[in-house]
Image 1 (cartoon, helix red, strand yellow):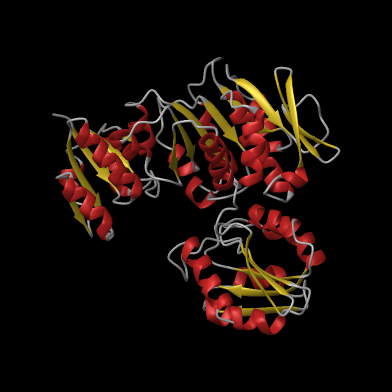
Image 2: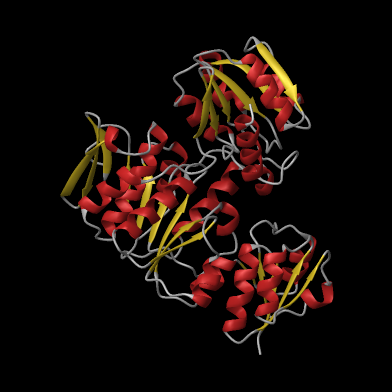
Length: 444
């Protein structure tokens, strides 16, 4: 009997463990931290052995194969030992792909992944497809393969999830953009991060599709340096009819092999230039799945915005409060600031991932009237932004932050939480940070 060891007891790891059990493997799961009660219940229900709070090295190194959760780096000592011993280390997505013949629509990029994934899923669902939602959103792909059946999956894939994928293939792969992010995981080398993202194209054949942003210089350069059999479908906000999707006279145009349709931007539920790109990518994916254009238009008009991504919370005394907690890198904050029409009180801060704030410098100068730095260590923020705007203040909790923003913001201005940074210095996750923001704002 094959012995499968799963490292990590979250959504991904528990799903992989259940799939291994269903496929007749001897499964054991280990987590260095605490496993959430809901996941312990699942493991116990499926009679899967587990441990928490430590890794028993001998048991890990007795595996025939290891499934590593995305958050565990390849450089972790135990992973390095396993690989040195010749034990295959794979991802949950790789494992799940072995046991399904469903179509895979896979979406990656530094920014916009979640919105595009949920929008694509919404279009497919509204069109009546038997579709599953997986990856960074929805349930674990492995859990769904183990316990459900879908004809197609829409999967959000981070660079971490793309690591340790070898034979898995995306039938439709979407690359939204590539900007510096998680460089601490990739030896602070942009080329390593880019290579991780482009794993989404591996194993694609002439039957498969690659959808990408034509105007991204990193994507364009990488495509020129590689060979692929996949059919290419570029999109652009320029009036460029050589692209599969483009903007012209306020309308989004989609042209798949001469079959063209369009939709006015103002009829789409998602506004802002960044959401035009997301809508283009989702629309091309849907068109390639032969979904009728009227279904796509209807779904684009009815989709509801993603929580924690430019989410309107409330207006109070003429001040708008916007929750963009999911902006955990500089480029994502760039998109948020680009979409602002009012003067902004900007909340920045958290765990810096090697950020270069020069990308938002001009937008800050043009649109921001005050910055509140919300983090344990705001030294780097002060070094860059002090003197750039009239006021730069510190806060060590969300309540203190909102109190300061409430005092600073004037009628006609917007308080924008778009932190540029990960949340783990003061919060459990970006969701926790966004939820606390909304709670404090709604309590004003």
